[in-house]
Length: 351
Image (cartoon, rainbow, N blue to C red; front, side, top):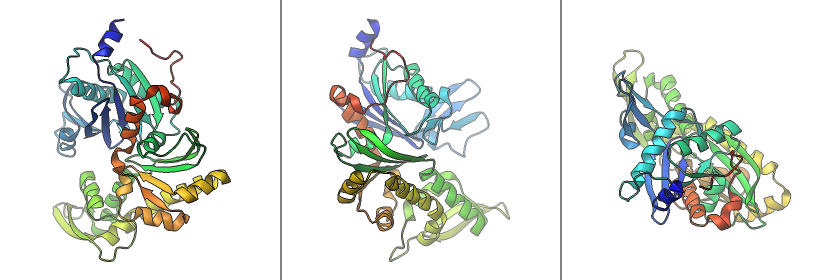
């Protein structure tokens, strides 16, 4: 009874709990939080120093007693306690301007395809421990498809490729459910690691993760560009140990990430091969839809279209497609409850 009372004063939330970024949609308000999934903790007093963008600035720059943690790896929770504290921080941030003393919101939260029962339960338990009174799970490509306004409840094939930080989710959806799918632990973070490795092998230069990500966004491409882009990168010379700056171009960055791109393209082809012919016909006429931060890589839509012989479209604002989908479900839970994943709890919370 008390929980229901607190619930009426709380703001229900849709959350895209990503490896790289966490986005929060608040009912009737829209997307209010878009921050890196990073937490900085002072181990001397076990206090959280910073969450999100402020914590990200500390990566690679903190003293021994400050741990800067990314509590999600490949789209799943790797550090339960830190994830719980991060979610609690975001819930409190959303309710800071309201009148709720103890916020108890309902939460719709995205999970990758193919996660284990234990991983699903970890997401539910972390959300409940952070203050949610009720948790609904939705598969991320389904949420992305809803956010992209695809007619997923129709008897027709819709193919979505959601390229995030830790995972690439490939799914064919029809009648509100996933028909064929593939989840790859290969996405934006792996491309950053590819760039770090390439720089080490070709320039004897050690880069940080943020530098690699920055150069990927700045000049990265999946295809040959008519005029190659150039940029400078700075790191530590592996031979002298001193600072070093080198110039790189988009062709070199493409060479660095080619293997990861090939894996994603092969995953898309494999999913199409396992899709019923009637749905493949729909996909051929409607095209493949890309979402997630990886969709912003220059020319990625063109190379996928060339390899699959199917039109490829990038959804509007691909970075927010999943959280927009959770928001749409949140606003109309009664009519869209069929697209949600089953709870790991035997008795759904209704208090």
